[in-house]
Length: 361
Ligand code: ZN
Ligand code: ZN
Image 1 (cartoon, rainbow, N blue to C red):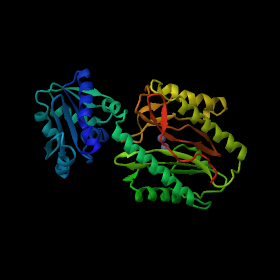
Image 2 (image 1 turned 30 degrees about the vertical axis):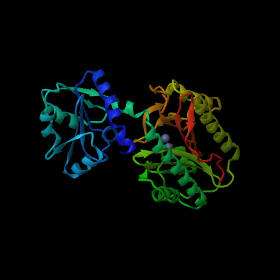
Image 3 (image 1 turned 180 degrees about the vertical axis):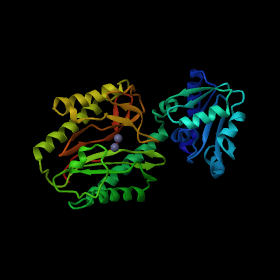
C-alpha cells in the first residue's frame, strides 16, 4: 500500500468528525485536490459522497477501472448520464448534506438542489483545506523530494544562463531538467522576469533577453507525485549595474526572510509572521514596495492553507509546510524576491530549500 493510501482512513476519520461537528449527515466533495487527498483517486473527474459510514466515488466510464486501483476505500457509483441522476438514490436517508461552497459553481449547486429537492443543503468552506494544511510523514517526504528537484533544476539553469539568452529559454532549461529528473511536470508556469519585468511580482516570462548586471527573478517549482514545490531566487549575471541599490534591496529582502524564518514556530499567527518581515522591510524604507503576503502553504496545490499575510486568519502549527517569500518591487528598476520552503517543527522551522542565496552568477 502506498504511503498516501495508508493515510486515507485517518483523513476520512478527521473529515467525519468535522462533518459531525457541523451537524451535516454527508458532504459532497467536488474540489479536485480534496477529492485526491481524501480518496487517493487521481483522475480528473468525479465527486465524493462521504457520510459517517459510507465513502462513495461517483465518476464516469473513463475512470471506473482507475477507481478500483487507486481508491479501494471507496465504493464506486457509476455515472452513466450525469451525477444529478444518481443523487436522489445516493442521498436517500441523508437529510442534511454539505457541499464545498468555495469550489462548486452556482450552476453545479443549483443542479444538485433541483435533483435532490428534499435535502437541506449546507454550504461549507475550507473543511478539507484545513485538514490538508497539516502534512503527514508521507506527504513531507514527497515535498522534500519536490523541493530538492527544484533546487537542482535551478542550479542546472543558472549554469547555462548567459547575457543574450531569452527569459523563455532559461525557463525551458529549468523546466526540461525537472521533467527529465523525475517531475510529473512543473508546479506552475515558470516565471523568469529580468530587469524592469521583475518589478511585477507575477510577470509573464517573455522573449526579453537577459542582460548582464540586471536583477533576474526566477520563480519555479516541480510537481512530484502530485505535490508541488515553490522556489524563488533573484540573481545577477556578473556584477550588478546599480550595485548600491541592488545590494541594499537584496540584503533587505534577505534580512526580512531570515528574521521571519527565525520567528516562525507553532502558535505564531500568519499575521504575526508576515509582520516580522514587513516591519524589517518597512524600517529599511521599502514597506510600500512589499505588496504581497509573506507566504503560503504548499502541497497538492501551489497555494493552499495556511496563508501568512496582513489579512491572514491562520495560526501556524507543527507539520505545516509553507513558503517564506518577501520581496521588494521597484517600477522601472526591477524586483528582488527570495523564497524558501520551510517545515514547521515542534519548536521552530526547518528550511527544506537548499538552493544557494549568493546572487552573483
Ligand atoms: Zn514562488
Ligand atoms: Zn510562493
